[in-house]
Length: 484
Image (cartoon, rainbow, N blue to C red; front, side, top):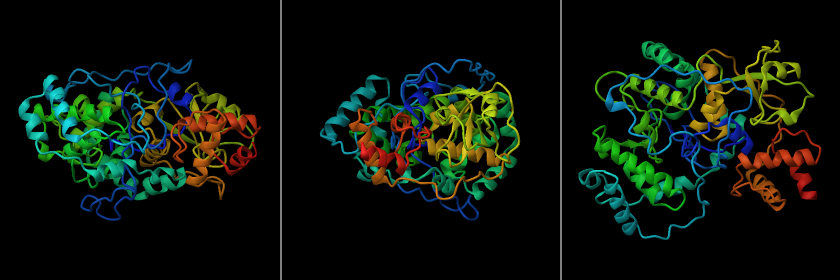
């Protein structure tokens, strides 16, 4: 979804463990990335430009293995059973489509094996798994890797931006307006999806806007060549080997041909950018024409997206995030996605709605999300926010997509918090990661992208230095680490 292979994932490892469902195994939300600018006018006819460096499935740190939900979290509501033609049904669950992707190799890894040898072995493996020789030949004969795809996979600059900068580029007023228009235009399909899957139209439309601007920015590269390249490459070959086989299965069953599989450099399919495994398992024929079409059928796009979100555990009739205002003094160490309290407890600590009105004093479990620390925007994240994190590991992306959905549904623009919130440059963030590593923390790759493991380590050191433990990297913490 653009398949969002975006990452700068940001919570703590504990946060991911607490939020993700127990079945988390393989690539769930990955991040290739949405376009950074909504078209200025007539978006349905204007090509969207890809974001700089957009598209890294693991631009941050991978999530930890999943754990049971926090105690007291109510069971998710179960949506109605899906009734769709066989052509759109799952094929057996060979690859999990929940959870997070496996760790990637470092960005400086070197592919040492010969492409011809790799391709010969892959073709044998695909045939042994039941893919027809006709499809293998049709899709793979004469194939060569694309160095441009590998180069784009290594980029990461876009993900080092602050949340405020990132969201300003992506959650644009134009996307809010166009999202509302799409809901009105496709009201019957959205109403049906709400009834069947329980997923809010604004949520679906927010992803649809970010992933392709409603089809204007799906990409124009041959999907099969991109998948071959990423499967052959050293960085995340095993993951994309599965994606390549899934794409061959899609061709084998007649949904598409290699020539019609055109999309992003990351091998994603359609307007909400499904990786092939997700398409194979969750694409449904929602308009009844005999096949799922995620390129041109708005009805199929809406139904398929809702179907996949229900699979990820979407809880009908519950919120996903709520913008709030935090007091100057509160137990900052509780602001962690790994920690949930009833909304009534946050109210007792002085958290209010964004406009200052009292917060609902109910038992709905919520975590306090501070993407820019205690001086920036603040949100309560509810169990449905987990679906955003599975769609895309980047906390910046997940929070932006969730916020955009609330805007499409009529919420006002968020408060930006205090002026001049301190931020680290990417070089300073790398230095911070090196200093944390020297103190025994595992922060993953030293890349300047403050992700899951880095934020866990930051919180631990904030507690040690008796700083407000909001898990946000600041020059103050960096200076303390430099002093030792």
